Length: 354
Image (cartoon, rainbow, N blue to C red; front, side, top):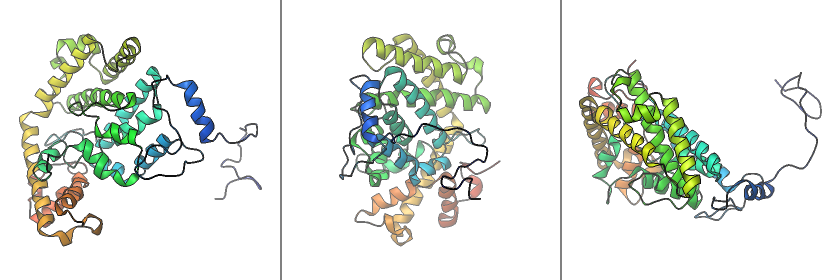
């Protein structure tokens, strides 16, 4: 129970590993190593980083490492485990927003390493990029659009609302805010890498989920996808990630050669046509929109039902923030308990069904 040893306690009684005693490798020394490891255009950690509220630097962690740690330990990140990536009714082998974030981080880290830029910043942006998503897949954005002036966009919502209390660095917030291709370009190379990592990851893993669910078959894939990137998630990820590394290194532009980019675009088009907009998916999306719309309306009519931290000067923001933070299961259970929704007519979501 208490470990092994007298003055120094070890975890294992048989431990034989050791190092030569030396001073700890502190943040300042590690920041200096970044200058030797990364290319000149990379984002370099310095001190506490550029934050809305000034902080004292951590003795050991760089500013981007602190960002990553804060995201991983946040409630918003944990809740991603209870939010579906793509909801397909009635049965689906579902990836969650959490597993998606981890897969995006893997792709972003691989590209950052290959290009020679800040791996930790890319990792932090990738892990936090979808924290602004509501329950029930992308349909949540359609539901919340009607309540938010200018519309609801999960990138800015994640950076400016959901993760605001974490006091993250400007570079991490910018990458989260602008990771979608429809947004302005991120300010850093690492942010642009995550934009590619997100698209690469979801195109490959959503296809894999759909094949496992029997929605599409390998033989249905467009020829250019199979020829250029293969038919498995593994080969597709390797092809697309390698293309970004090699193209960026050769041209100086964070991008992909035209041939491979066409294959990725065709894969995305195929997914939209055969997975995301299939009749069953559209029907479930409409249900999700109705559920979330009704829930926001309920909390606007009953602000006393909101937790205290969501009651502020702007009741609409509070209601949307609360409902947007819900997991699938909690949102659907609230719809049944508060609004009388028939559970049999609710989407399955994470934790529902077999």
